[in-house]
Image (cartoon, rainbow, N blue to C red):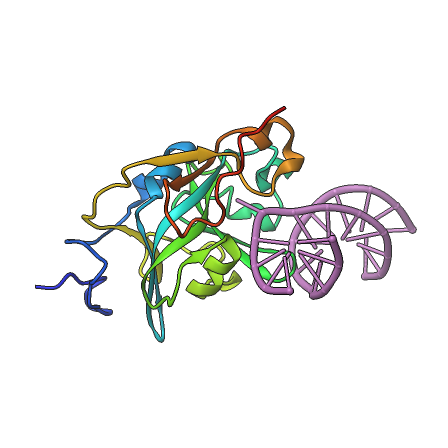
Length: 210
DNA sequence: CGGTCGATGATT
DNA sequence: ATCATCGACCGC
């Protein structure tokens, strides 16, 4: 019997999905971002759009550790934009960047911690015609917009699932992209990607010399 | 390396 | 209310 995603809503030919597929629950997200981030690698991001499912396998993420993390949006305090990031775990913090791109985070930790994991790259599984490398391209490929701001990822529109494929054999940690303004936080190895995966948004830079 | 424009925070 | 500044990026 073929694996199905969210039976009752749709099923799909599960070429790239191994065995049983299960939605990640609230408890998965209710842990520190630095723990959730590498654990999201290899998981399936699923968007049940009206035109059918779009599914990608997560191969690159970044952890944002809350108000003390100068690279995190929550370091500027509570605003209308960061409300969702300060909210309960397992919801989507979506924001618009450079006036044209969307980025999606999975909110982590206890409510009020202001921590989240940015999803940066996907390998195509279903409904995507190529790898989505880079957070802006990821949202475009998955058709994720501000309409999804604050959406519950433990629900049946947009969610993350685990299947029975093996965990990534090797995970690389490196500094986060585009946060050079964040002082000492810019250098912390809070970006995680599947070692050697062709879909990562950027190869790790040369070793930093300073 | 520059486009592009909404969110932000300072200011009125 | 308005205004100047600035991006957790992308494509050349």
